Length: 247
Image: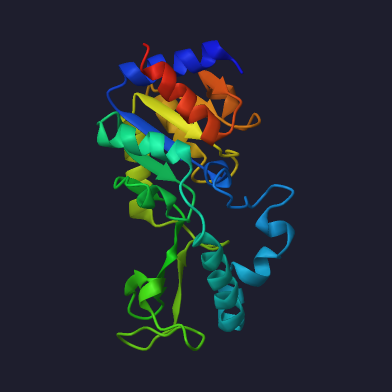
């Protein structure tokens, strides 16, 4: 571990006025949620085009819903790890202003952080393909599949961004605005290769922000990072917090 890097990161955060956190799958992985691209990732077991595209859903909505309900069942036993608890406290103390995440697991909201921009949606929500009604999946009747809208009886789908679909423009605009306004961006567990999300650290950097990267390996973001900490999020964030109290 590079103690100097952790100490520098803590100083940047201590001196920040607008700290923004940007996360990828590496943040969730420490809570036991598999990543999509690792050797044990979800896509090593399933073909994306069979389960995570609009065409796949329209072809066999029952199969896709079974898979998503299985994924949701796996989330039931998952809790936000100690890194989430650090960020949640920073948020309550006013140190952390916004979270931008590529994750769809809802762990930031469960940890008590309200200002979360969910770029790729939330797996715990569903939306109607007809009237656009959104609600939590827990509130829906799942006794028979596919799930139908309680308002118009249209077809409900998971409220996530599938392969080949554009991100919600208003959500992307909010993420870009927070990136431009940040003076420090803490980038955690992202490969930096999924666009347009991957632009976010570069927008922050171009706007003058310091970039702190926490990742178990170098990424496409590392070249613009002012500080790189090669640890898991669950280990790095408590360490930074420890030094934050000393600077």
